[in-house]
Length: 149
Picture 1 (tube, rainbow, N blue to C red):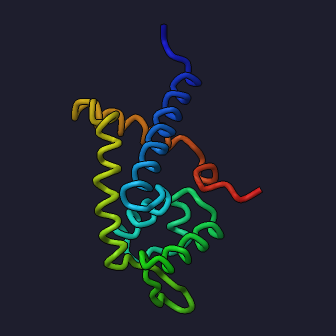
Picture 2 (cartoon, rainbow, N blue to C red):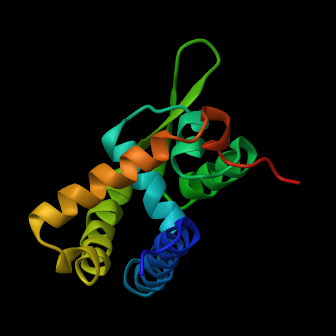
C-alpha cells in the first residue's frame, strides 16, 4: 500500500522529533548544551558575524528569543559580542564556544549515525535531494519561525 502524504509527513516529523530528543539529552549530559545552543554555535561556526536575525531564522526562533539566547550564551562565555556595521552588534564563537561546538558535533553525528547513518551513501543523497525538493515547495513566508502568539 502506498503511503499517503500525511503518512510521509508524520514519518519525517517522527524522525526529526527523535533526533531532537536524543541530541538534546546527550548534549545536555555530555557537554552542558541544549540542542538550540549547539545549533547557534554551528551556524556561527559556518557563518561568523551572522546577524541575530539570520541566526533566529536558521535556528527556528523569533528574533526576540534569539536575542535572549545570545545574551545568555555571551554570559556563559560561549559567544563574544563584536561591533558590526553601524549600530549592529554581531556575535562570534569564543574559544570556549568553538570547543563546545566541536564536542557537540561528535554527539550530534552519533545521533544521526543511528538513523540516517544506516542508509547507504546513495540513499542519503536521494533522501537529501527529496527533502530539499519538498521543502522548496513551501512559500517563503511559511518557512520563517512563527512569531510568539
